[in-house]
Image (spheres, rainbow, N blue to C red):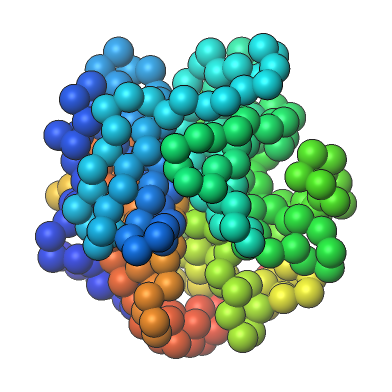
Length: 312
Ligand code: BMA
């Protein structure tokens, strides 16, 4: 094990492996939230035909999971929206009593972001797509900002996008989105020099919004994925207040280094547990692990190990 900063890995990692779902080739970048007296999640499963599907799971402690062997069944009002292609990298945000569940859909016109809502993780009602192609990452804020729903997303291209920056958008109704604003992009000479994208939904803290994100650089052997952190202005969340120069987590463990896509830590959910924050992250596109940080230490780390803007 090497170079732990503020996040400490759980000793029992990985917590979810392909053995959890009969048809899984791999199970990784997934969405987890507190639910009733435990946790619920929507898991990305790359099945043994390499179609990518999403499966609901439940857990009492957030560590041992029961995952549905069947893919999630979305109640879809319109033939046009029906999912016929790969779905992946789900995210979840709770606003009031509703869970908003987003995913990336590999449509023939390029990747875009789909969305459904649920209250009970039994029935899911699919809504309008949140973005045009091409966009591969989207997280919804847990409350309205200045009276509007808000999201961070990462416009992309048709393939394994060699660029990527985070944008902020707002909507009065979760259907019509606008006010698209650049938030931050890659940084030269660093682990985040190729692209960055939002990870878990932003967490509201005293100083503003805490965003854990992924940053990628291109080694001579391909992409390497890291986790970083930023604090954004509470009222104008496109304004960066602080952003990590040093990564929060790097792929150093065997289960992060070896897998279908080697050298990946991909944070996709965060849960605040008292004064701690736990992240769930995909490992090498094969399994899921957790790591925890003291929330105060994490905020201090991001504030004191910052990188100057503007990014390049
Ligand atoms: C995500 C997805 C994955 C990819 C990954 C690294 O954005 O596109 O399919 O392998 O990044 O986990």
